[in-house]
Image (tube, rainbow, N blue to C red; front, top):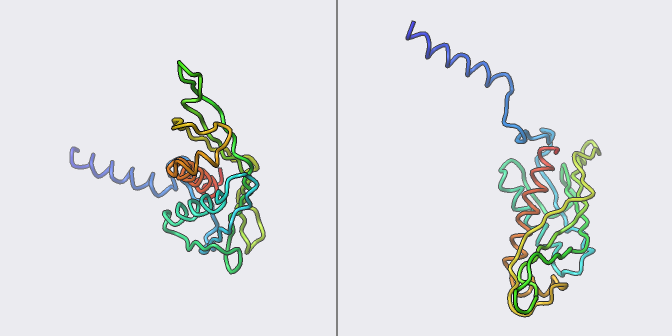
Length: 178
């Protein structure tokens, strides 16, 4: 009887795993024929130069990290394409200094409309007209709080963190269809 218990447990685990169970939120909903994904330059309606390039590069890097696809910068000769329209970055003051009442902490939010489309079937696989990603930053020096371009020019890591968070959110949603 004691020898049968491990075998029964192993058999039960095998049966459950064969039934198609997977971790919630991790299922890839991209059709099997999609092998090559294009991520062309995003449309930049913000006031931040290169925001489109930095975010598109981050999305390409995140897609490549998934290991299943060939990722290119073109929208032609691909099975699917991921496009985005970037709107102006929103800035919010989160904290002020005690003495001078100047901004000491703020958040920046990138807002975009994103679409992932299967070009073989001409079907939209995933779309979100309001992708929002925010990151918090400590104010340094005398940067004008209403000028995200100045913040990004002084703190390259600020833009990189925002781009990475954006890419992770977009790629997870696009591949999982959520």
